[in-house]
Length: 114
Image 1 (cartoon, rainbow, N blue to C red):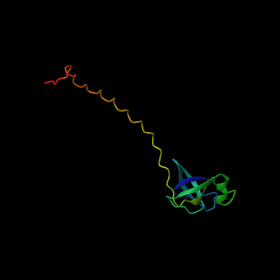
Image 2 (cartoon, rainbow, N blue to C red):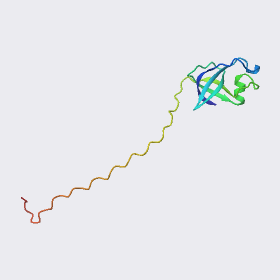
Image 3 (cartoon, rainbow, N blue to C red):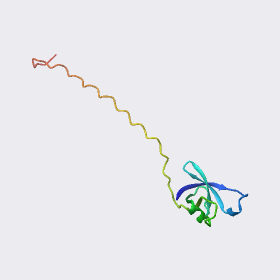
């Protein structure tokens, strides 16, 4: 099964007889657009569950139906994962700490300087 987003309806009035009058939708799977038979009445913007292969044919009405992708459910609430951005470069290491300043030389006599 796939989770895809419905982009827009696809109208095709000249079809083979086996295609009947099923509604078609353009769906987006990642960066790829595909056509799916709509068995549930999805609208543009809906996130939907699709099945493919023989499951798509059965969901569309029969094993002989010419479909390899069929919408079988509309998702009530879905927050897609945000697009993965490139991993940020590590922060540059900070410059070495400055050397400590030296204290004035001590008075060997122990008296006050002045």
